[in-house]
Structures are given as structure tokens and as C-alpha cells.
Image 1 (cartoon, helix red, strand yellow):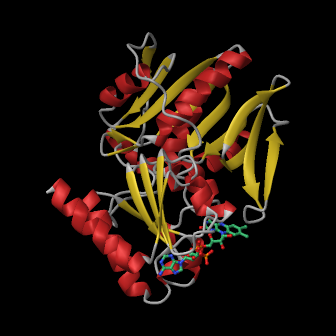
Image 2 (image 1 turned 180 degrees about the vertical axis):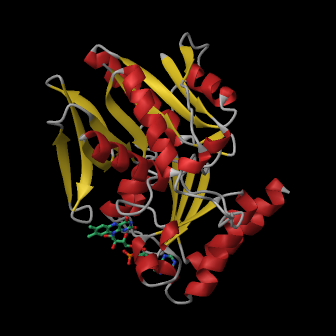
Length: 326
Ligand SMILES: Cc1cc2nc3c(=O)[nH]c(=O)nc-3n(C[C@H](O)[C@H](O)[C@H](O)COP(=O)(O)OP(=O)(O)OC[C@H]3O[C@@H](n4cnc5c(N)ncnc54)[C@H](O)[C@@H]3O)c2cc1C
């Protein structure tokens, strides 16, 4: 019996939210009297396996093959099945990215496991693994326990802190991938990068977000938010009201039904501070709020508050940061 965590990687770099899951898995394992193992799938995955040891995995299973160089569901699910058997795992965890979510669901279905998707908490209650996830558009938080022998969960990024990196005392165990390319039904014929050079919200150290406060001139408002993100090397966020109004695409939404973020600095411009927005950014280290209403709830959460018009404040901040940061 052990907990197995899938370490997602892209082009040889691990997705950092997997380490958060691995860190939590170790706490759970200690409470359940078992151990936490990691699984790295890809080609030439030794460096990531060493990283996983540093993040505290007791065992790191590796499935390495040219056929696994790129994520494909069918062979990746086969590798997970091998690792589950090797580890005798009764819990399988992924991060709740698109890939992690699909892999978790596939593994749960193929092995008759129970699944809790997109969870924001995992803990042991009365000796049983319990997961929490938002349901009904985030109006209710549901606690889920598992009746199945295998419990599977995908975990929302930023739900748990990054674990400390140590020397690592675990071991690496290669699995015999033994994959025949001809037997894999998914073929990758081409790659088109969707990345436009934007900084990812979930990884950003600084985020500048705009809300409905830009409504007087949304294009100008988000251009001002963008100018400040450029000078700070920040990612651009938004409230749901700004997204729903079509000012900015959904991928920028922060909050209960958007992304959960935890930057060192979060600047909220024209955002009132609704509970659902705070749910996604309330754990930021420093929060700066720009709002012309001094009674706006965001000021209760803010480290620093600027009571003024964002159309005047944002360009002033951008100019000042330009001067100071060169
Ligand atoms: C189930 C559910 C899930 C939700 N999930 C999310 C979520 O994930 N993320 C999210 O953000 N919301 C979410 N919401 C919506 C949330 O309740 C709020 O409606 C939303 O956050 C409000 O966005 P806002 O602060 O931009 O707009 P408002 O609440 O309208 O606030 C706009 C603010 O801008 C200020 N302002 C106006 N003009 C200016 C100006 N020129 N300069 C400076 N300040 C100005 C105003 O004083 C006001 O405080 C959810 C709601 C529900 C019911």
C-alpha cells in the first residue's frame, strides 16, 4: 500500500504544481502509515526523477521510452498501471491540469477506482482519505470519501504549499516500458504552440488583475493593466465580472471558478473583492488594491490600498516602476 503521484513534465521540465501534490502525499502517507512514491513518464527522465527524490519521494518509478516522449493518454495510462502494480498503490494523485485530469479519470475507470476531480483539499479523517471539491459552480464544497480499493484524485494547482527540497533518501526504480509504437493508437503529427509568451498565472510571482472597474473603457483599462504587467514581468489576471463582460478571455480569471494563485504580489485594479474572487487570490503574500470606493471589501484584505481612479493610478504606477526598475 502506498500513494503514487504522477509528475507531469513538458520537454524535460516538471510542472511545478506536481511537487505541491507530492508534498501533500508525504503528509498523507505519514498519517496513513504508508509511503509516497512518484512516477515520471517520458524520455530521458533521470533529471526529473532526481528532482522528485529531492522533493521527498520514497521511490521514484520511471517509465522512459521514445514512445513516451510526448504525452499520449493510452501509453501513459499503461505506464501508470505498471507503476500502481509495482508500488502496490491504493491512492493515485495527479495535478488537475488538462492532462492530469484526463489521466486520472482514465486510470480510475480502467481499474474500477473512485475519483475526486479538481480537488482543493486532501486529508485523512478517521483513517480515511477525504477530498474536498467545489460543486454547483463553486456554491458548495463537497467532502468525498472513497468506497473503492483505489482512490484517485486530481488536485488543483496552488492547493498546497511547495515542499522543501532536501538531499533525498529514496530510490529510483525504472519500469520496463516495453512499448510498441505500432500498438499506440494516438499519433502526434504536428505541434502548434498556443503559448504567446504570456507568463502563466499559476506560476507567476507577480499578478496584476483588472475587474469591472475598467468598464468605462475596457480596452484602455486592460491595456493599462497590460503595461503594468510588462514592466513588472507579471501575469495578467481578471475578475469573473471582467471575463463575463467579454473584456478579457476566461483563461485570465482568478477565483473560485477560475485559477487559484499565490503570488508574492497581487495588484487588484477595479475589483471589489467578492468572496469568490478572494477564494482564488486571498493567500497572496502582498495585496495592493486600487479602487475608487474606499468601502470596497477588497481593502479589508489588502496590504496596501490606493483609493483612486485606476485609469490614473495604473499609468502612474507603470511610470514609477519603469524609472525604478530601469
Ligand atoms: C458560484 C460563483 C462563482 C464565482 N466565481 C468567481 C471567480 O472565480 N472569480 C471572480 O472574480 N468572481 C467570481 N464570482 C463573481 C463574484 O461574486 C463577483 O461578482 C465578481 O468577483 C465581481 O467582479 P469585480 O470585482 O470585477 O466587479 P464589481 O464587484 O462590480 O466591482 C468593481 C469594482 O471596481 C470599482 N471601480 C469602478 N470604477 C473604478 C475606477 N475607474 N477605478 C477604480 N475602481 C473602480 C468599484 O468601486 C467596484 O468596487 C463568482 C460568483 C458566483 C456566484
